[in-house]
Image 1 (tube, rainbow, N blue to C red):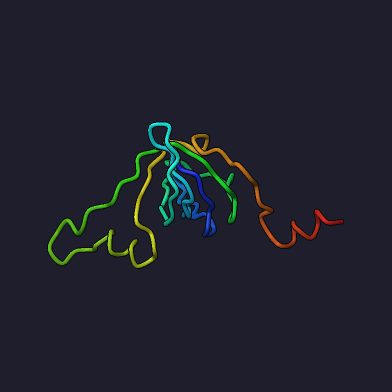
Image 2 (cartoon, helix red, strand yellow):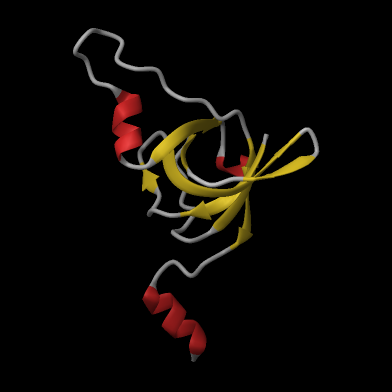
Length: 116
């Protein structure tokens, strides 16, 4: 499935991975464009500073919903994500798997600097 959308939170960069929250506006499945809405969390299996808040991105991946708690009374990752307005997950091996369609300035300072 091809996913297109906008990064709606600052990227969460860890030592071994990066998380992005993407507001999906379209999906392409079997050469059919589907209007879509909702947020997904994208896990990239490497750290990356390539992405910024408000970048428009496109990538191909399998969207899945995490299961509930593994142990009775345990942490419910699905509920945690749903409470944040996130209803699906995608895991990608590397940052190069995501195309930046439109790059946004990384800060208001950079935006101001580009004006002058």
